[in-house]
Image (cartoon, rainbow, N blue to C red):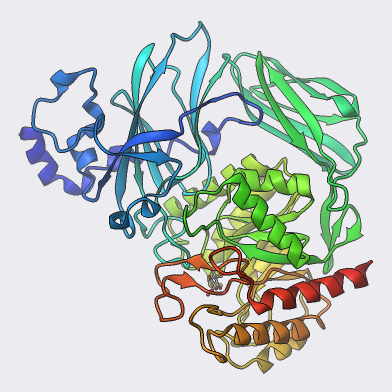
Length: 587
Ligand code: GCB
């Protein structure tokens, strides 16, 4: 009772001890090729709007210690309703559809005693947005960011026999986070990517980064533990080399001449890295991507990006993405004639880039620095920088990924400039081999492509909606003529809603009007030679809370394909014809 009284007095502080953000890019482990134990499947589940669980310490009420339950408790984490992991709670029950707040996931895990010197790590593929991890009642840390993986070491926390893992996942939109409170995609909550338990020796490989840079293959290994060197092997290239580790870090330039990865020939090499008995593997392609003036070059050849934007969203499963769903997206992109996809507006499932590597598709990957962000807030900046670092470390061996995008439609203020220049510098420090972009806005006052951030970017992404939000279509041609960017521009978005079910015959929200916008956009943009790619908005209709008119009905209807992921709208064929013509001219 005394404790309850204290909780009432200090309400604003109840969660402070849990917002440590100690699970971040530095605690990630490299996961390629590890044989983990899946912890997917049924977990006990309870939504907890008022954070009663943190206040009442539900996590401390372990079944192993019933004596801890000295007062009546309001939830038994070890009994009751279960949900599958991965999932988004919105997709499981109608009463959870608009739920925003904390939810508790609990499950038992039985393990054997660890051999001397061995370690254990829990890896969560993604949880939206704040995930606090408890094991046997002990708080181990939290992670911010809804779309990147994170790891927590459980070596000390797990006991031989039965253990209880609890995750408190909170998807509340708050002012200091990334994204902030307003987005044009659905705020799915929950543990929606895979959860895995890994065992390693005393040395664990945290990072492995291979790339072609300055004409040579370079490798970086970061390991934590006693090993003094790492062994890197790429059998097909005859590479077998020992990399000395100084304070856990080693870098080498290899004598190797790989065949280059390209969309026409997506060659991948098997790579193995071992350090102190820890072994990871990967399949890596080698290629270069550069920009000079307003050109983009892939392996030294000029490149035009025939693209399409995509969200990770599904009528049935929400943000849970299956292998089949990723492959279907890529097949539809191929059918459109794309060589490129913009994975908007947050890191997609890591399988996407692996599959794109195999298929030879080029990708733009992005972090959710979206619209308004509290650019002046150091906590926001730490969060964005961490999400970017986690994304880059996760995917920087993927040849398909050619662009890191550091934001979308952020107003050109001093605070934003400083914040995003910082992000560009982080991306370049983590990975000097890819192009940096952001989806910027047109300067509508000057009718010109002009953004102070451009100097920090390799590619200026431009989102423009002439024919839709911007009614005066003629302005687009004026902007085209007024602009003389010194680097490539990619039209990262353009489009219009078309409701194929209930839309009118013509005018706004008709599929006919959507097609008209595509026709006019294509005609106008094709004349501008600094434009080196387009990725119209968007492949599929996607769910969003904020769009509720009679045609939208909870969906953004700018898809070229409807939410059923089958029904093609007429604009699909139009863009496909344009891309076919472009591709034939390039040949
Ligand atoms: C944009 C945003 C995108 C929206 C889109 C729209 O500019 O970048 O997230 O969904 O417009 O449909 O309004």
